[in-house]
Length: 230
Ligand SMILES: NC(=O)c1ccc[n+]([C@@H]2O[C@H](COP(=O)([O-])OP(=O)(O)OC[C@H]3O[C@@H](n4cnc5c(N)ncnc54)[C@H](OP(=O)(O)O)[C@@H]3O)[C@@H](O)[C@H]2O)c1
Image 1 (cartoon, protein in one colour):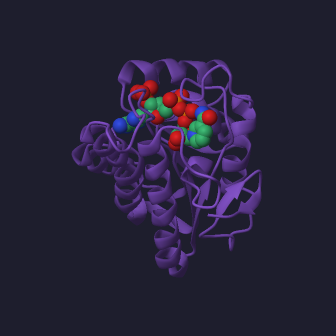
Image 2 (spheres, rainbow, N blue to C red):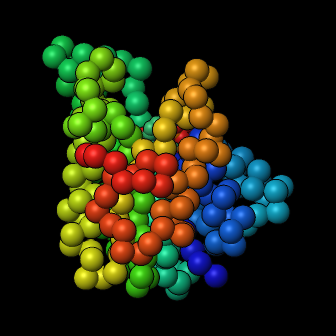
Image 3 (cartoon, protein in one colour):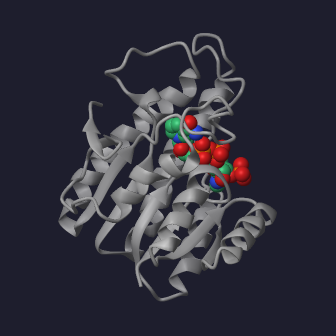
């Protein structure tokens, strides 16, 4: 049975990725920072006949990440897929030239250091071959016209894309594919009600990268199963 760990999986796109991988027969490690929310998410999956193992992890807290990795190691299994999905977009994230420094700090800590530290902590437990999927955003693109919305969030996704390329380069020897994916504008708490995509569509390409995408596709930025410009 294949295994996958998804961060920030108690709701939104992360929960949907867990659900879709569960339907494909994966043993899913459902990770989140809040016990109560995770219990609710687990109950929902159980109701749907799917199985998931809870793994408490706050991606901004190194101790919590290392404790989660230790807990995972007690299962004595390897991970086939790691999905770094957890992220924040602060409502106060409006103007890079004048916002409080803490907005950038908090956003980078969660959206960049989070995925990097989680990837490093779980590296010893990744299979050969394995896949790391970074949930990024077109907001991080340096090709699209930039500006006008949530600058700290956009900067954090540019940095995440760069982390993706560096990890992909270093991990090719271990047969670990690492890609960044833009899920599109998705109806979640983060995306809002005006978003154009249902959550199932938002999870589609991340799930493809976790399963059917060619193993030698690595170090790329992907949207709708196609490579896009950085
Ligand atoms: N929705 C969109 O339109 C859209 C577009 C492009 C990219 N994305 C990306 O897609 C991913 C999922 O977004 P979403 O729309 O599903 O957002 P969401 O509904 O706000 O869910 C975000 C998830 O991340 C978790 N999280 C936040 N900080 C965390 C931390 N420190 N430790 C652990 N978990 C944490 C949240 O947990 P809590 O419930 O505890 O807060 C929640 O489970 C993100 O990477 C986002 O940037 C979304």
